[in-house]
Image 1 (spheres, rainbow, N blue to C red):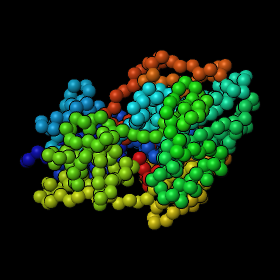
Image 2: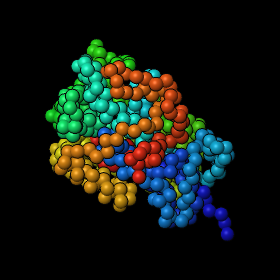
Image 3: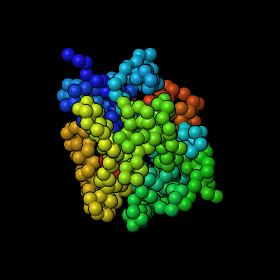
Image 4: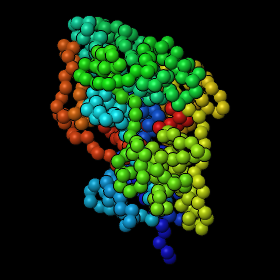
Amino acid sequence: MTEQSRVVIIGGGFGGLYAAQALRRAAVDVILVDRRNFHLFQPLLYQVATASLSPGDIASPLRGILRHQKNARVWLAEAVSIDTAGRTVAFRDGSSVRYDYLVLATGATHAYFGHPDWEPRAPGLKTIEDALEMRRRFLNAFEAAERVGDSEGRTRLTTFVIVGAGPTGVELAGAMAEISRLSLPREFRDIDTSCARVLLLEGGPRVLPAFPPELSEKARTQLEELGVEVRVNTFVTQIGPDGVLAGNETIQASNVFWAAGVEASPLGRQLGAPLDRAGRVLIESDCSIPGHPEVFVIGDLAHAVSDGENVPGVAQGAMQMGRHVARMIRNDLAGRERVPFHYVDKGSLATIGRARAVADAFGLKLSGLVAWVTWAFVHILYLIGFENRLLVMLQWAAAYFTRRRGVRLITESWHPRGQESVVAGDGAVSRAAPGAGAGPRPTSSHTEAEADVETDADASAGSQVARE
Protein backbone atom coordinates (compact mmCIF):
# COMPACT_ATOMS: atom_id res chain seq x y z
CA MET A 1 0.00 0.00 0.00
CA THR A 2 1.53 3.34 -1.05
CA GLU A 3 1.56 6.33 1.25
CA GLN A 4 -0.83 9.11 0.27
CA SER A 5 0.42 12.58 -0.62
CA ARG A 6 0.38 15.02 2.27
CA VAL A 7 -1.19 18.43 1.74
CA VAL A 8 -0.28 21.00 4.39
CA ILE A 9 -2.51 24.08 4.47
CA ILE A 10 -1.36 27.05 6.53
CA GLY A 11 -4.23 29.33 7.55
CA GLY A 12 -7.83 28.49 8.44
CA GLY A 13 -9.44 31.50 6.80
CA PHE A 14 -11.64 31.41 3.73
CA GLY A 15 -8.94 30.22 1.33
CA GLY A 16 -7.41 27.55 3.55
CA LEU A 17 -10.71 26.18 4.78
CA TYR A 18 -12.26 25.97 1.33
CA ALA A 19 -9.13 24.25 -0.02
CA ALA A 20 -9.30 21.66 2.77
CA GLN A 21 -12.99 21.00 2.21
CA ALA A 22 -12.52 20.69 -1.56
CA LEU A 23 -10.01 17.86 -0.95
CA ARG A 24 -12.44 15.76 1.09
CA ARG A 25 -12.73 13.05 -1.56
CA ALA A 26 -9.13 13.21 -2.79
CA ALA A 27 -6.61 10.46 -2.03
CA VAL A 28 -4.51 12.77 0.14
CA ASP A 29 -3.86 13.45 3.81
CA VAL A 30 -4.78 17.03 4.68
CA ILE A 31 -3.25 18.91 7.60
CA LEU A 32 -4.84 22.30 8.25
CA VAL A 33 -2.56 24.41 10.45
CA ASP A 34 -3.70 27.55 12.24
CA ARG A 35 -2.49 29.29 15.37
CA ARG A 36 -6.15 29.73 16.34
CA ASN A 37 -8.62 26.91 16.65
CA PHE A 38 -11.43 28.48 14.66
CA HIS A 39 -12.50 30.04 11.39
CA LEU A 40 -13.39 33.74 11.62
CA PHE A 41 -16.04 35.27 9.38
CA GLN A 42 -14.29 38.61 8.89
CA PRO A 43 -17.02 40.40 6.90
CA LEU A 44 -19.03 40.70 10.11
CA LEU A 45 -16.11 41.59 12.36
CA TYR A 46 -17.18 45.24 12.38
CA GLN A 47 -20.44 44.14 14.04
CA VAL A 48 -18.45 42.81 16.98
CA ALA A 49 -16.59 46.13 17.10
CA THR A 50 -19.88 48.04 17.17
CA ALA A 51 -21.66 45.88 19.78
CA SER A 52 -24.12 44.12 17.48
CA LEU A 53 -22.70 40.60 17.68
CA SER A 54 -20.59 38.54 20.05
CA PRO A 55 -17.34 36.92 18.89
CA GLY A 56 -18.87 33.45 19.06
CA ASP A 57 -21.53 34.46 16.53
CA ILE A 58 -18.97 34.87 13.75
CA ALA A 59 -16.48 32.15 14.60
CA SER A 60 -16.67 28.36 14.32
CA PRO A 61 -14.16 25.79 15.60
CA LEU A 62 -12.12 24.33 12.76
CA ARG A 63 -12.30 20.83 14.22
CA GLY A 64 -16.08 21.07 14.29
CA ILE A 65 -16.25 22.23 10.68
CA LEU A 66 -14.03 19.36 9.49
CA ARG A 67 -15.27 16.70 11.91
CA HIS A 68 -16.81 14.56 9.15
CA GLN A 69 -13.84 14.86 6.78
CA LYS A 70 -11.85 11.69 7.49
CA ASN A 71 -8.75 12.70 5.52
CA ALA A 72 -8.33 16.04 7.34
CA ARG A 73 -6.55 16.86 10.59
CA VAL A 74 -6.33 20.21 12.36
CA TRP A 75 -3.11 21.31 14.02
CA LEU A 76 -3.01 24.22 16.45
CA ALA A 77 0.42 25.67 15.68
CA GLU A 78 2.14 28.78 14.36
CA ALA A 79 4.26 28.47 11.22
CA VAL A 80 7.46 30.53 11.36
CA SER A 81 9.55 29.33 8.42
CA ILE A 82 9.30 27.37 5.19
CA ASP A 83 12.04 25.34 3.50
CA THR A 84 10.89 24.92 -0.09
CA ALA A 85 13.96 22.85 -1.01
CA GLY A 86 13.38 20.37 1.80
CA ARG A 87 9.59 20.69 1.61
CA THR A 88 9.19 21.34 5.32
CA VAL A 89 7.35 23.87 7.48
CA ALA A 90 8.79 24.75 10.89
CA PHE A 91 6.61 25.83 13.82
CA ARG A 92 7.26 28.16 16.72
CA ASP A 93 7.40 25.30 19.23
CA GLY A 94 10.38 23.78 17.37
CA SER A 95 8.48 21.02 15.60
CA SER A 96 8.12 20.70 11.83
CA VAL A 97 6.15 18.86 9.18
CA ARG A 98 7.05 17.63 5.71
CA TYR A 99 4.69 18.22 2.82
CA ASP A 100 4.12 16.98 -0.71
CA TYR A 101 1.91 19.99 -1.41
CA LEU A 102 1.83 23.26 0.50
CA VAL A 103 -1.04 25.75 0.41
CA LEU A 104 -0.18 29.09 2.00
CA ALA A 105 -3.29 31.10 2.93
CA THR A 106 -2.01 33.41 5.65
CA GLY A 107 -3.77 36.60 4.61
CA ALA A 108 -2.86 40.19 5.37
CA THR A 109 -2.58 42.61 8.26
CA HIS A 110 -2.82 46.37 8.75
CA ALA A 111 -0.62 48.76 6.74
CA TYR A 112 0.18 52.18 8.15
CA PHE A 113 2.15 53.41 5.14
CA GLY A 114 5.47 53.77 6.90
CA HIS A 115 4.02 55.01 10.21
CA PRO A 116 3.99 52.01 12.56
CA ASP A 117 3.84 54.45 15.48
CA TRP A 118 0.23 55.21 14.50
CA GLU A 119 -0.97 51.71 15.30
CA PRO A 120 -1.37 52.14 19.09
CA ARG A 121 -3.45 55.28 18.58
CA ALA A 122 -5.45 54.07 15.57
CA PRO A 123 -6.20 50.33 15.82
CA GLY A 124 -7.33 48.49 12.72
CA LEU A 125 -9.85 45.69 12.39
CA LYS A 126 -8.54 42.26 11.43
CA THR A 127 -8.98 40.10 14.52
CA ILE A 128 -11.43 39.44 17.33
CA GLU A 129 -9.01 41.17 19.67
CA ASP A 130 -9.00 44.23 17.42
CA ALA A 131 -12.80 44.26 17.42
CA LEU A 132 -13.05 43.95 21.20
CA GLU A 133 -10.54 46.73 21.71
CA MET A 134 -12.38 48.94 19.22
CA ARG A 135 -15.68 48.22 20.97
CA ARG A 136 -14.12 48.98 24.36
CA ARG A 137 -12.75 52.31 23.18
CA PHE A 138 -15.98 53.32 21.48
CA LEU A 139 -18.26 52.51 24.40
CA ASN A 140 -15.84 53.75 27.04
CA ALA A 141 -15.70 57.14 25.33
CA PHE A 142 -19.35 57.78 26.24
CA GLU A 143 -18.82 56.52 29.78
CA ALA A 144 -15.88 58.89 30.21
CA ALA A 145 -17.78 61.80 28.65
CA GLU A 146 -20.65 61.29 31.13
CA ARG A 147 -18.25 62.18 33.95
CA VAL A 148 -16.37 65.04 32.29
CA GLY A 149 -17.42 68.50 33.38
CA ASP A 150 -16.15 70.64 30.51
CA SER A 151 -17.74 70.68 27.05
CA GLU A 152 -14.39 70.64 25.27
CA GLY A 153 -13.42 67.41 26.96
CA ARG A 154 -16.77 65.84 26.14
CA THR A 155 -16.50 66.84 22.51
CA ARG A 156 -13.03 65.38 22.20
CA LEU A 157 -14.09 62.12 23.82
CA THR A 158 -17.16 61.71 21.62
CA THR A 159 -15.47 62.55 18.34
CA PHE A 160 -14.62 59.42 16.36
CA VAL A 161 -12.36 59.57 13.32
CA ILE A 162 -12.25 56.66 10.88
CA VAL A 163 -9.42 56.73 8.36
CA GLY A 164 -10.24 55.01 5.08
CA ALA A 165 -13.60 54.82 3.29
CA GLY A 166 -13.48 51.32 1.87
CA PRO A 167 -16.15 48.82 2.96
CA THR A 168 -14.75 48.44 6.49
CA GLY A 169 -14.52 52.19 7.07
CA VAL A 170 -18.00 52.83 5.67
CA GLU A 171 -19.55 50.07 7.76
CA LEU A 172 -17.84 51.25 10.94
CA ALA A 173 -18.83 54.86 10.38
CA GLY A 174 -22.46 53.99 9.68
CA ALA A 175 -22.74 51.69 12.68
CA MET A 176 -21.11 54.13 15.10
CA ALA A 177 -23.34 56.99 13.96
CA GLU A 178 -26.44 54.81 14.23
CA ILE A 179 -25.60 53.65 17.76
CA SER A 180 -24.89 57.19 18.91
CA ARG A 181 -28.16 58.54 17.54
CA LEU A 182 -30.60 55.66 17.90
CA SER A 183 -29.41 53.25 20.60
CA LEU A 184 -27.78 55.32 23.36
CA PRO A 185 -29.59 58.67 23.84
CA ARG A 186 -32.02 57.49 26.54
CA GLU A 187 -29.35 55.72 28.56
CA PHE A 188 -27.19 58.70 29.55
CA ARG A 189 -28.24 61.61 31.77
CA ASP A 190 -25.50 64.22 31.42
CA ILE A 191 -24.56 63.95 27.75
CA ASP A 192 -26.48 63.89 24.50
CA THR A 193 -24.98 60.96 22.63
CA SER A 194 -26.73 62.03 19.42
CA CYS A 195 -24.27 64.95 19.28
CA ALA A 196 -21.31 62.61 18.88
CA ARG A 197 -19.25 63.35 15.78
CA VAL A 198 -18.29 60.54 13.40
CA LEU A 199 -15.85 61.61 10.70
CA LEU A 200 -14.93 59.39 7.76
CA LEU A 201 -11.72 60.48 6.03
CA GLU A 202 -10.77 59.25 2.56
CA GLY A 203 -7.69 60.20 0.56
CA GLY A 204 -9.36 59.44 -2.77
CA PRO A 205 -12.15 61.33 -4.51
CA ARG A 206 -15.03 59.12 -3.29
CA VAL A 207 -16.07 56.56 -0.71
CA LEU A 208 -16.15 52.87 -1.70
CA PRO A 209 -13.77 53.43 -4.61
CA ALA A 210 -14.17 49.82 -5.82
CA PHE A 211 -17.89 50.39 -6.42
CA PRO A 212 -19.47 52.13 -9.42
CA PRO A 213 -19.46 55.94 -8.99
CA GLU A 214 -23.25 56.16 -8.70
CA LEU A 215 -23.27 53.69 -5.80
CA SER A 216 -20.40 55.52 -4.12
CA GLU A 217 -22.47 58.70 -4.23
CA LYS A 218 -25.53 56.92 -2.83
CA ALA A 219 -23.40 55.47 -0.04
CA ARG A 220 -22.12 58.93 0.80
CA THR A 221 -25.67 60.30 0.86
CA GLN A 222 -26.83 57.54 3.21
CA LEU A 223 -23.85 58.11 5.51
CA GLU A 224 -24.59 61.82 5.70
CA GLU A 225 -28.25 61.08 6.46
CA LEU A 226 -27.00 59.21 9.53
CA GLY A 227 -24.92 62.22 10.54
CA VAL A 228 -21.50 61.00 9.40
CA GLU A 229 -19.15 63.77 8.25
CA VAL A 230 -17.64 62.44 5.03
CA ARG A 231 -14.45 64.08 3.79
CA VAL A 232 -12.85 62.90 0.55
CA ASN A 233 -9.54 64.01 -0.96
CA THR A 234 -8.35 64.27 2.64
CA PHE A 235 -5.02 62.76 3.63
CA VAL A 236 -4.05 62.07 7.22
CA THR A 237 -0.44 63.13 7.82
CA GLN A 238 -0.24 62.78 11.58
CA ILE A 239 -2.02 60.87 14.35
CA GLY A 240 -1.29 62.11 17.85
CA PRO A 241 -2.60 61.75 21.40
CA ASP A 242 -5.39 64.26 20.87
CA GLY A 243 -6.46 63.62 17.29
CA VAL A 244 -5.32 63.72 13.70
CA LEU A 245 -3.85 66.19 11.26
CA ALA A 246 -5.96 65.92 8.10
CA GLY A 247 -4.78 68.27 5.39
CA ASN A 248 -4.27 71.58 7.16
CA GLU A 249 -6.84 70.88 9.88
CA THR A 250 -6.25 69.36 13.28
CA ILE A 251 -9.26 67.31 14.36
CA GLN A 252 -9.44 66.95 18.13
CA ALA A 253 -10.49 63.36 18.83
CA SER A 254 -9.67 60.81 21.50
CA ASN A 255 -10.65 57.88 19.27
CA VAL A 256 -9.18 57.18 15.84
CA PHE A 257 -9.80 53.94 13.98
CA TRP A 258 -7.83 52.68 10.99
CA ALA A 259 -9.40 51.21 7.83
CA ALA A 260 -7.03 52.55 5.21
CA GLY A 261 -4.80 49.72 4.06
CA VAL A 262 -3.37 46.24 4.44
CA GLU A 263 -0.07 44.51 3.86
CA ALA A 264 0.63 40.84 3.20
CA SER A 265 1.56 38.32 5.86
CA PRO A 266 5.35 38.18 6.33
CA LEU A 267 5.37 34.39 5.92
CA GLY A 268 5.19 34.86 2.16
CA ARG A 269 8.76 36.17 2.16
CA GLN A 270 9.94 32.73 3.28
CA LEU A 271 9.15 31.26 -0.13
CA GLY A 272 11.85 33.09 -2.08
CA ALA A 273 9.25 34.00 -4.72
CA PRO A 274 8.90 37.48 -6.25
CA LEU A 275 6.71 39.91 -4.32
CA ASP A 276 4.76 43.02 -5.25
CA ARG A 277 5.06 46.33 -3.38
CA ALA A 278 2.50 45.23 -0.79
CA GLY A 279 4.46 42.05 -0.05
CA ARG A 280 2.03 39.76 -1.86
CA VAL A 281 3.47 36.75 -3.68
CA LEU A 282 3.42 36.94 -7.48
CA ILE A 283 1.91 33.60 -8.41
CA GLU A 284 1.61 31.63 -11.63
CA SER A 285 -1.69 31.27 -13.46
CA ASP A 286 -2.48 28.04 -11.56
CA CYS A 287 -1.81 29.73 -8.18
CA SER A 288 1.55 28.00 -7.67
CA ILE A 289 4.82 29.90 -7.20
CA PRO A 290 7.56 30.05 -9.86
CA GLY A 291 9.83 27.00 -9.77
CA HIS A 292 7.75 25.14 -7.19
CA PRO A 293 4.54 23.70 -8.64
CA GLU A 294 3.91 21.93 -5.31
CA VAL A 295 3.57 25.25 -3.45
CA PHE A 296 0.39 27.30 -3.81
CA VAL A 297 -0.37 30.77 -2.45
CA ILE A 298 -3.97 31.97 -2.23
CA GLY A 299 -6.14 34.68 -0.71
CA ASP A 300 -4.88 38.08 0.43
CA LEU A 301 -1.28 36.84 0.36
CA ALA A 302 -1.41 36.22 -3.40
CA HIS A 303 -1.02 38.72 -6.22
CA ALA A 304 -3.27 36.89 -8.65
CA VAL A 305 -4.32 37.88 -12.17
CA SER A 306 -7.37 36.49 -13.93
CA ASP A 307 -8.34 37.45 -17.48
CA GLY A 308 -5.89 40.33 -17.36
CA GLU A 309 -7.37 41.81 -14.16
CA ASN A 310 -6.02 41.67 -10.62
CA VAL A 311 -8.06 39.42 -8.35
CA PRO A 312 -9.36 41.57 -5.45
CA GLY A 313 -8.37 40.71 -1.91
CA VAL A 314 -11.83 39.60 -0.86
CA ALA A 315 -13.32 36.44 0.56
CA GLN A 316 -14.81 35.33 -2.76
CA GLY A 317 -11.38 35.40 -4.35
CA ALA A 318 -9.89 33.35 -1.51
CA MET A 319 -12.72 30.80 -1.64
CA GLN A 320 -12.40 30.36 -5.38
CA MET A 321 -8.61 30.05 -5.21
CA GLY A 322 -8.95 27.49 -2.43
CA ARG A 323 -11.21 25.34 -4.57
CA HIS A 324 -8.94 25.83 -7.59
CA VAL A 325 -5.75 24.62 -5.90
CA ALA A 326 -7.63 21.58 -4.59
CA ARG A 327 -8.65 20.85 -8.16
CA MET A 328 -5.03 21.26 -9.35
CA ILE A 329 -3.83 18.78 -6.73
CA ARG A 330 -6.49 16.31 -7.84
CA ASN A 331 -5.43 16.88 -11.46
CA ASP A 332 -1.82 16.09 -10.57
CA LEU A 333 -2.80 12.87 -8.85
CA ALA A 334 -4.94 11.83 -11.82
CA GLY A 335 -2.32 12.76 -14.41
CA ARG A 336 -4.36 15.61 -15.85
CA GLU A 337 -3.01 18.98 -16.91
CA ARG A 338 -3.36 22.04 -14.75
CA VAL A 339 -5.51 24.94 -15.90
CA PRO A 340 -5.34 28.69 -15.14
CA PHE A 341 -7.35 30.13 -12.28
CA HIS A 342 -10.43 32.03 -13.43
CA TYR A 343 -12.03 34.47 -11.00
CA VAL A 344 -15.79 34.93 -11.12
CA ASP A 345 -16.82 38.30 -9.73
CA LYS A 346 -20.10 37.75 -7.89
CA GLY A 347 -20.52 41.38 -6.96
CA SER A 348 -19.88 43.75 -4.08
CA LEU A 349 -21.95 44.68 -1.05
CA ALA A 350 -21.55 47.27 1.69
CA THR A 351 -23.93 47.99 4.53
CA ILE A 352 -24.21 51.47 6.00
CA GLY A 353 -26.88 51.16 8.67
CA ARG A 354 -30.41 50.11 9.40
CA ALA A 355 -32.08 49.53 6.00
CA ARG A 356 -29.16 51.32 4.35
CA ALA A 357 -26.70 49.61 2.02
CA VAL A 358 -25.38 49.53 -1.54
CA ALA A 359 -25.00 46.48 -3.75
CA ASP A 360 -23.41 45.83 -7.10
CA ALA A 361 -24.45 42.21 -7.52
CA PHE A 362 -26.32 39.87 -9.83
CA GLY A 363 -26.00 42.44 -12.61
CA LEU A 364 -27.96 45.01 -10.57
CA LYS A 365 -26.99 48.22 -8.81
CA LEU A 366 -29.07 48.49 -5.66
CA SER A 367 -29.24 50.84 -2.70
CA GLY A 368 -31.34 51.38 0.41
CA LEU A 369 -33.59 48.69 1.91
CA VAL A 370 -33.39 46.29 -1.04
CA ALA A 371 -29.59 46.36 -0.94
CA TRP A 372 -29.63 45.90 2.83
CA VAL A 373 -31.88 42.83 2.59
CA THR A 374 -29.58 41.43 -0.13
CA TRP A 375 -26.53 42.08 2.05
CA ALA A 376 -28.15 40.38 5.05
CA PHE A 377 -29.22 37.33 3.02
CA VAL A 378 -25.76 36.83 1.48
CA HIS A 379 -23.92 37.12 4.79
CA ILE A 380 -26.29 34.74 6.56
CA LEU A 381 -25.83 32.31 3.65
CA TYR A 382 -22.04 32.29 3.96
CA LEU A 383 -21.84 32.03 7.74
CA ILE A 384 -20.37 28.71 8.83
CA GLY A 385 -22.80 26.55 10.77
CA PHE A 386 -26.59 26.57 11.11
CA GLU A 387 -26.49 27.68 14.74
CA ASN A 388 -24.47 30.79 13.84
CA ARG A 389 -26.87 31.65 11.03
CA LEU A 390 -29.86 31.38 13.35
CA LEU A 391 -28.28 33.42 16.15
CA VAL A 392 -27.16 36.21 13.84
CA MET A 393 -30.51 36.34 12.08
CA LEU A 394 -32.39 36.61 15.37
CA GLN A 395 -30.07 39.32 16.68
CA TRP A 396 -30.34 41.33 13.48
CA ALA A 397 -34.12 41.08 13.61
CA ALA A 398 -34.17 42.24 17.23
CA ALA A 399 -31.82 45.14 16.47
CA TYR A 400 -33.86 46.16 13.45
CA PHE A 401 -37.15 46.45 15.34
CA THR A 402 -35.87 47.67 18.73
CA ARG A 403 -32.86 49.74 17.52
CA ARG A 404 -30.91 48.37 20.46
CA ARG A 405 -27.44 46.81 20.50
CA GLY A 406 -27.35 43.86 22.83
CA VAL A 407 -23.60 43.30 23.28
CA ARG A 408 -22.55 46.62 24.78
CA LEU A 409 -20.09 45.13 27.25
CA ILE A 410 -16.92 46.96 28.25
CA THR A 411 -14.32 44.41 29.27
CA GLU A 412 -10.60 44.32 29.65
CA SER A 413 -9.26 42.82 26.47
CA TRP A 414 -6.00 42.15 24.71
CA HIS A 415 -4.10 45.24 23.62
CA PRO A 416 -1.75 45.63 20.67
CA ARG A 417 1.85 46.53 21.42
CA GLY A 418 1.91 49.91 23.13
CA GLN A 419 -1.84 50.25 22.86
CA GLU A 420 -3.28 53.38 24.41
CA SER A 421 -6.67 53.48 25.98
CA VAL A 422 -9.22 56.06 26.99
CA VAL A 423 -10.24 55.89 30.63
CA ALA A 424 -12.96 57.65 32.49
CA GLY A 425 -11.76 60.67 34.40
CA ASP A 426 -11.44 64.40 33.97
CA GLY A 427 -11.41 64.35 30.20
CA ALA A 428 -7.75 63.56 29.80
CA VAL A 429 -6.60 60.55 27.88
CA SER A 430 -4.62 58.12 29.99
CA ARG A 431 -2.03 56.00 28.20
CA ALA A 432 -0.54 52.83 29.54
CA ALA A 433 3.07 52.01 28.93
CA PRO A 434 3.74 49.36 26.31
CA GLY A 435 2.81 45.99 27.67
CA ALA A 436 1.11 47.36 30.74
CA GLY A 437 -1.84 45.26 31.77
CA ALA A 438 -1.48 42.89 28.84
CA GLY A 439 0.83 40.36 27.34
CA PRO A 440 2.95 41.13 24.30
CA ARG A 441 1.31 41.20 20.93
CA PRO A 442 1.58 37.80 19.29
CA THR A 443 3.42 37.68 16.00
CA SER A 444 1.18 36.04 13.48
CA SER A 445 1.91 33.66 10.67
CA HIS A 446 -1.53 34.40 9.29
CA THR A 447 -4.32 36.88 9.75
CA GLU A 448 -7.42 35.56 8.02
CA ALA A 449 -8.52 33.75 11.20
CA GLU A 450 -6.27 35.16 13.87
CA ALA A 451 -8.60 35.58 16.81
CA ASP A 452 -9.76 33.73 19.89
CA VAL A 453 -13.45 33.50 20.71
CA GLU A 454 -12.67 33.14 24.40
CA THR A 455 -10.84 36.46 24.82
CA ASP A 456 -13.91 38.20 26.19
CA ALA A 457 -16.65 37.61 28.73
CA ASP A 458 -19.40 37.54 26.11
CA ALA A 459 -17.70 34.94 23.92
CA SER A 460 -19.69 31.41 23.72
CA ALA A 461 -15.49 37.26 10.66
CA GLY A 462 -19.82 46.84 2.75
CA SER A 463 -18.30 43.84 1.60
CA GLN A 464 -17.79 41.68 -1.39
CA VAL A 465 -20.42 38.94 -1.53
CA ALA A 466 -18.87 37.35 1.58
CA ARG A 467 -15.83 39.56 1.53
CA GLU A 468 -12.40 40.11 3.06
